[in-house]
Image 1 (cartoon, one colour):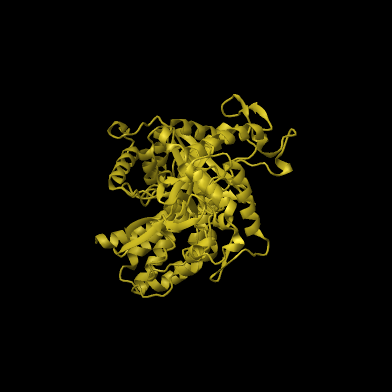
Image 2 (tube, one colour):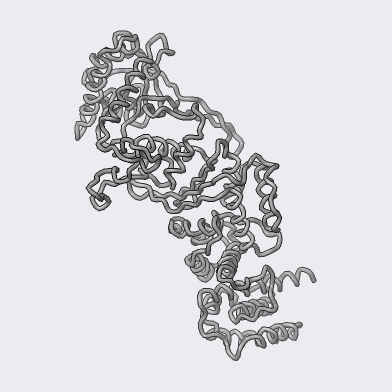
Length: 600
């Protein structure tokens, strides 16, 4: 489904947005100026100066490489041939080491790289006649790396000879005549590229995307821009191991994707990943979204604001809030005021690296309007107040790890299931509920250090409420958790949570809030899972605290009301769902106690 959607997206792109399949974009930092006889006359810095302000408002100047179109780069990780090479090791055949240039290295990589570059390009340029083509040919013939170890132009470049700083060529005195733009060069490469594609195709078969008989791609181009992916890129389709081969088909012939379709989907996905409007990164999962529409930028900005992060544009934030507020109230949204079609087919895809390959963790396809409705339902499920703020997925994920941990990660399958629940209205994963309950029970309050969260906050409680209510609703049961304190709720776990909040309040009142540790710090985790083992002791402590209070009768009445609704004894153990009910009961009762105090 993803490859077909990306091919459809490609067909909608404007022609000037596409890079011809026989060319590829490459960043370069230097331009080598060649004389007609092939001598390097100078090497010019062609980076682009960019001025921007840092966080303190001071202007900062940076220099970015210039992007140019070169003949298609190879995808191999070994020493390989490229026409009009851009890598300095291949061009010069020299290593830079502590201020000196040398042809020597342990594996003779510099020598091998230069030889394959030189021989391959001499063969390609031997019958071309333009001035820049001849100058490049003469350079290839005359350049001897062992004679250039003292070349001042190269020594002046220093470490850039061995780093990821890349080069292009132009004619000395005429910088507008560039080798990579020479028509006869590009036209010859295009012709040879197309001939090679046909010759390399070992299989003609029905393309699984277009349904036409076409040459099938044996190797798929790499995808770049994935969080945690390889710098050279990862492949979405690859069948390198025998275990993935079937019916006698090797390589990627097994996928039955034509060369044409492969070019389309890899171009589209790389384009989307290069645009911050079309992607977000949640932990280690890269989430890409797009609509099958010629103009989907606003829809993607909405998607970022609807479920991922606060929109960078104030106008978009207002639009998102307006749509969400209408949806929460059950009001049908009017999209006519915006440049959006609610019937557009919209895709959200989660990708993670898996070695050299990409793993598709989830994919959701639906009408854009339906996806918004699902997100609005998610926000209703999460809300603890009628006009509560929206909670982004990134915030939810952040609550699933210890606030003091720097390396802990949320498992990608959990993130995938979370996205699926938010975007489709399915049940939230059980692992989400168990993880957030574990965090609440194990984390510690740290109110003085604002860098860390309080163990029990609106987002964590909202997660529990959403999990329990959606599970009940999809089981055709009545939603059990209301937004505020529910005095009619007789669930034993919920009542235990309420009772724990009252007992804690009594303890705090008796000590004038001067305790270093409360019963919440000492007994909350046990009370939430095994109430019967804790509450008798808490009652004994409460009697001591009540004797110090002026309003002991009021608190005794509250305790009595809750205990009367409890069955004969405290529950011995609580299930995971009941532990969630305990936490919500505690949270809502605690909030009601302090809200009442503030009101008085």
